Length: 216
Picture 1: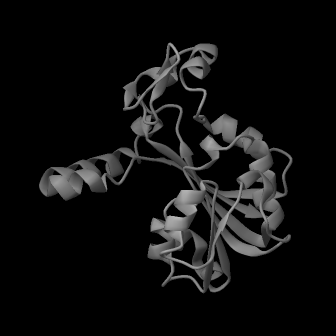
Picture 2: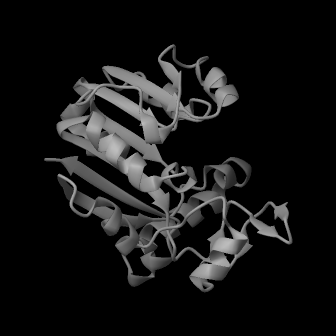
């Protein structure tokens, strides 16, 4: 999905903006001419360096790169965690070369579960919590001050007035590799079913938005 969107831009430079422990860096290294990872959490950045020497500890709101440095930027379920998502979007566009793309994944407001847990009476509760996304905004933010979810209009507002063209946008369900690893037959059936749902009106309940944003 990522490499298909990037196409010939893989012959240039890629930034994984929020690379975690380096799983995507490891997977993409053989498919990209040059890839750099940026990770905010120092310990995770150190772990990612086992997969790539090109890992930098830094923040998405202050990218330590010159303008027009990359042809592809991958931001996979990261924007919802940053302190300032608008500043982070501006920074990605600053370091992206004209004609380059951002491959952006963020959580979908319509998904029935909050996958990052919630805070209740000052205590964090881990797990997939149902129906939180459907609460009034003020209450939802009290329960999940540590993370955002996005509607399509939320994303459109982030990029409003920016020098961009949205070349693709869709709502997708997860790959559910963890279920496939434990229950192969059931997991593969579930994946096929959910991929089919992505082409129906029920896609509004999908896990994530996937947007491809080209800098013009």
